[in-house]
Image 1 (tube, helix red, strand yellow):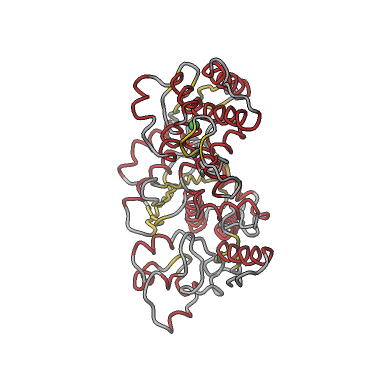
Image 2 (cartoon, rainbow, N blue to C red):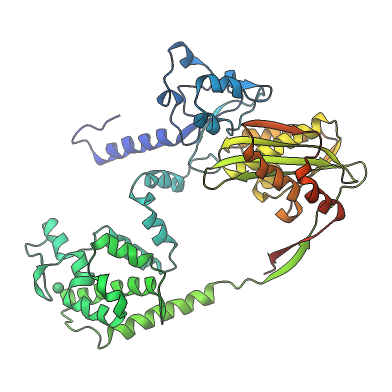
Length: 467
Ligand SMILES: [Zn+2]
């Protein structure tokens, strides 16, 4: 839909909103019967697959379910039609393989699949200047909100300098009222005007002064905002933001209130504002008290089995994998697995790990099960599975719950990593494997020492917050 030239702003808004809505919708695959493998958008971060690889007409109507096999993705079939880098993004996609859960359209920018204005804004700005890392850096800076907005406007060149006022036909004169001749640009006001230079001369250390006045507006703002330098009154980046703010205020006092002179010692005004702000920050930042605890894996009671699972993600490549182990009350190995899941998010890895661990336990006909994993979010998703509805990982969660309900009894707990070492090692090891699942009927030799640590109840230290 393209808005006609000269149409109303309301209509332009409707067209813009509908485009954004289309962009944010995707299929969450249930049993995969409704979703077209090639033509629909169903993989995170990817357009429909036919945009990615050449495909013939008849195949275009294939459903996603045609690429499922034995309760998971048919990796061999995927390998016939897609390159490995795409398969890596597909096999971590949750689905209700062969199940009854219907495919549904969800709003993917929000974590629960439900539309929210906030996530729509994020989607909008992710593809514009807001995704620029400078903006994130600015937003994370612990400075007063009004200064953040001011600095952002400065970066956009949108504060009303005379240069800007001429552009908007508010005046004919772009020169600086203070020093005369030059065009009063944003950079002139904040740095290059003789009045601003008086302020910076009081703030800059000699080694900073050489290149401080050389760069253009944005590199200048960026380099100062990201500076790790510290001066007496606090971080240099705070000083710069506060200084820009005051220089702007003093300039406006001159233009609008005819207050020609700045404070006698601008440095003192800026320093004291920075110090007051830092003091306020320290008071509001909650003090956290940590204490050391010792944690060890413990076997389940007699007649019960314990499943430890874990997911792993390599930050650089985005590769994910999972692993898990089943042990009895004597700490003996009753089966384990590792799975290479391609490329995805860590929560997907955790839930896939849980699903394959549960399958392993169910196939071994265990009736009483205790599950431990170190992802609190995954445990929470399982416990609140009824509320998920449109959650992007709802199919995976519901598959796990489906298997859990087959046990006579089960308990699921979030534990710290120190109690989950064996599963953690298996998950990390999965990155060395080819895509897919590897069942481990016997404990691998390289896990020997970690397993013995668990058998002996060897505890590992961890610092935890107590306040
Ligand atoms: Zn000037």
